[in-house]
Length: 203
Image (cartoon, rainbow, N blue to C red):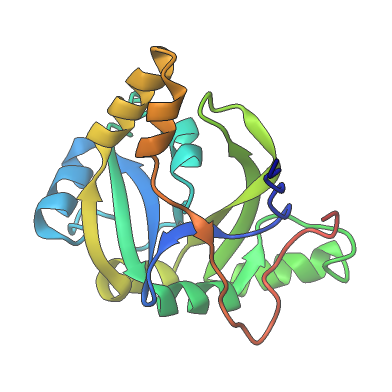
């Protein structure tokens, strides 16, 4: 009998091609619907604010409540350039201080202030949105990274709100196999980088 191995504690898993990576975000209709219509983020999308992208569909479902939370009613699948993700990760800092990764808290704060991207690792989720023992990447983009994400790196934007609702209904009905069959295929993503991807030192 084949036993599926538990993924590494810190690993990027995503739907991806040779040149793109898909991440998920959720917005109010005033932002989400124009983004889908035009295939790019509208002017109302604040390019001077930090935006968080998530390559895990189920983690996005946990965050937005299957698209039911106020202000997160439109769930987007944003396909953007793999090279953009690599650039963001290369210039990222961990979102919180970790002893053993940073020389001290002051050094981390100084690095964080200048970093255009932040890496955060949160427990991956199962179909019931319960935490799993391994982590899922969240990537915060600000400054140059946010502007380039919105205006240079984005390749396509799709509305996956109907998919979120379909999967949720199947989970609620107890049809977990069908629900799982609808999930996007997320596989390990390996990006060459001059420096290691920031991860806590407990994994």
